[in-house]
Each structure stands twice: as C-alpha cells, then as structure tokens.
Length: 119
Image 1 (cartoon, rainbow, N blue to C red):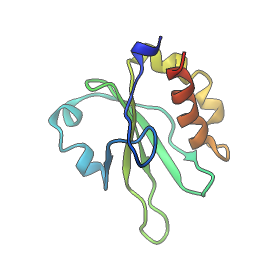
Image 2: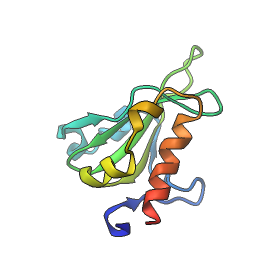
Image 3: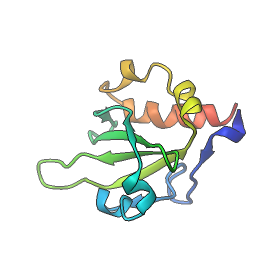
Image 4: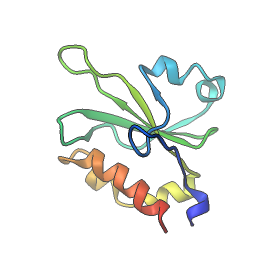
C-alpha cells in the first residue's frame, strides 16, 4: 500500500515539507479554500507541550496539523503531514480517537503516517 500514501518530505523535518505561518497561508490555494475538510482530532498533544488540530482536505488529499496558539500568542503554524486518500487515511490512523488528547499523541499521529507508508 506504499503507493497510496505519498509523504511530504523535507530536509529539516521528515514528513514536513510544506509549512505555513498560519491557516491563511494554507488557504491561499483556492483548492484548499473551496474543499470540504474532515477533522481528524482537535487536541493532539506533543511531547514539548504544544497542541494541534488535525484535518484532512478532500480535494488535495492533504492531512495537515495546525498548532494551537499558546497564552503568549505563539503557535498557529500549519504543517502538511501527508498526502493520502481517505480510505488509506482510515487504515493508517485506525484508533486515532482513543489516542488524540493523550500525552505525545501528536508524535503517535506522525509515527502512524510514517509506519503505514513503509508497508
């Protein structure tokens, strides 16, 4: 199933080639702006304490995560984690509702995408 999950790659952070400072940057692409989205968790927690909302964009088949703003106004950046068809996303992230919100759940989300890509 490797061909169904197309990762976005980067030299800086594996899995994160496309990064935007805010949702406005993400939605500058009209395909993303007009597309339906499906929430894939509202509070993914990273080891460093940051939290994220994840969503899948139907038209571009992109799964992205947006960092919640913290009390000092930091955050809000957006990372596209993978390009993946809906059916493959469901298999790769099976059980995500039970993981979302737990400590290090954001890393679990990223790991599941990488792990599934290797199959």
